[in-house]
Amino acid sequence: MSVITDIKPNKRDKDRVNLYLDGEFYGSVSALVAAAKRLEEGKEIDEKELADIIFESDKRNAFEYALGYISRYVCTQKKITQKLYDKGYGKVVVEYTIEKLKSYNYIDDREYAEQYVALNKGLKGSRRLREELRARGVAAEYIEDALKGVSSEEEDALALASKHAAGKDLNDEKYVARLVRYLSYRGYGQDVIARTLTKLRSDRGQKE
Image (cartoon, rainbow, N blue to C red; front, side, top):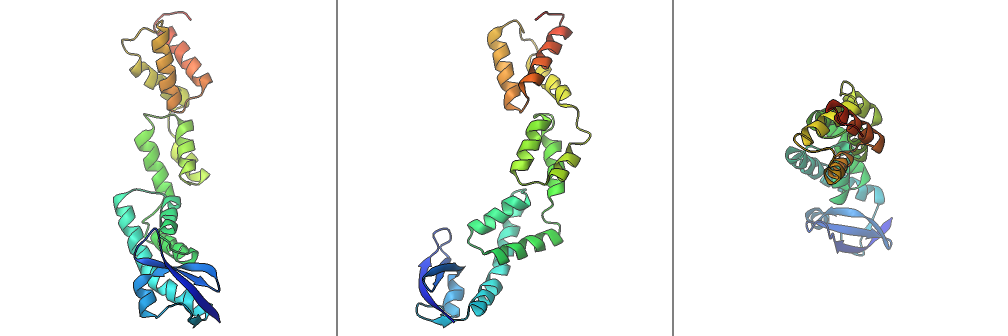
């Protein structure tokens, strides 16, 4: 048996409290559940019993919270997992919620990658798209599948640069510097940018 040695308000969620067993942080639980189950300082309680109380009280709330979040924002598994942890839910509840969301196809990182690439392929290079999807926690295989069929990085860079440079003087060093920054911001490497500028000038019959 363990002893509840302290109960403190959860700073991230005013409707939850943090429980401490034998002087160490154990986890958080709904303040209403804590009151209903008479979880109070000095009470002896079996850790398995406490874990069951928290799981049963949190699993529904966590799922409803996750549904509410993904109804407003398109997100990856990594994102909604972090949001659940930020709300104070423990590992068991978070894992249960994620698996339930996946079983209903409410989160699908493969589909997320495909949609992200489709929306951004005309604005960003494949390297930047790959980096951004990786940062969002999308698996490498999903990223590479989503990038299949996307035009080559150099083709994308040339299309963007051509549009940006329409009516501009490629002999104007200040403008060229701005174009380089523009392409660099969109994830293109210096080698791709250099070849893009060469191709643009060649198309216009200009020399380096």
